[in-house]
Amino acid sequence: MSKHQVNNLLHSVTLEQIINSLVEHYGWDGLGKNIDIRCFNSDPSVKSSLKFLRKTPWARKRVESLYIATQKSVWVKK
Image (cartoon, rainbow, N blue to C red):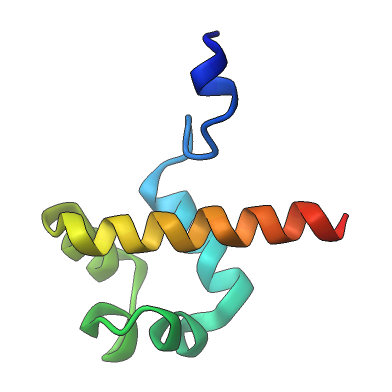
């Protein structure tokens, strides 16, 4: 494995896993407050979120960034 991938927190993590992890950590309400997009605020579901995020690169980037920040803060607390 290359050194680049070792340091990549998104390596081998699916978008569905990211969403589930963020929902577990923040809940739908908290996730919607952190990233104000309709798929998190109006009748949220993993399925609708996946559909939207796969088609919308700017939103997916924000979700991935929040996931990385959340993972780093969890690791610091351990």
